[in-house]
Figure 1 (spheres, rainbow, N blue to C red):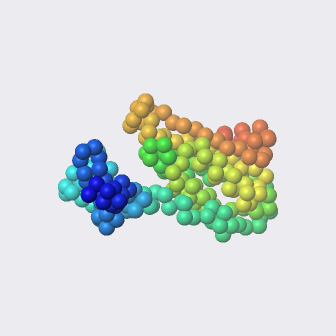
Figure 2 (figure 1 turned 45 degrees about the vertical axis):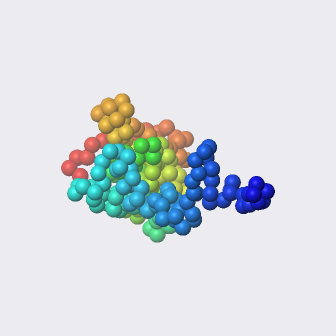
Figure 3 (figure 1 turned 60 degrees about the vertical axis):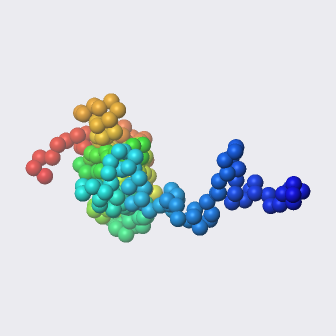
Length: 228
């Protein structure tokens, strides 16, 4: 009998396992397939539902029952910039013009999500460039800002992306970009400073090399609108 048992099936790596003196059956592949979805197979709604549970909430109550779907739709909108090509956007509105003075579009509203805490930051963007034979349709500058801001961002990278894209596509004499923004990750958590603002700039070409050009740009964006 002992010999027959020794020659029997080795269960050490099979569905049957022994843990100390207790025996148990490993779940079969069919049983595993019926378990809760893994992180990679879960839907966005599944993940939000789980987050609500871990926060101690009841995802089934009236105010939260549709929240997973709402959050999914909101995040798709707030990150839609990943699906757009900034160079294609700008190349659709390039015009040959004999003009070599500064073009400024200022006080452009911006909203984005900080990639560190997924909390919003918001403020204004000021953009200037000096053409070199070609100008952009004015509406394309706000659209470019929105494209990059509809991604998970930090303000410093957003500033340089706007400037470098304009410089690459239309090859002006220079580009200047300044962003002034407030960050909810500083206002509603962490240091909780309500009136602080971050200011970032990117200067390329003549805006970097010529102090007079840079100073003119900074002076003009500081001027408040006079009924305009």
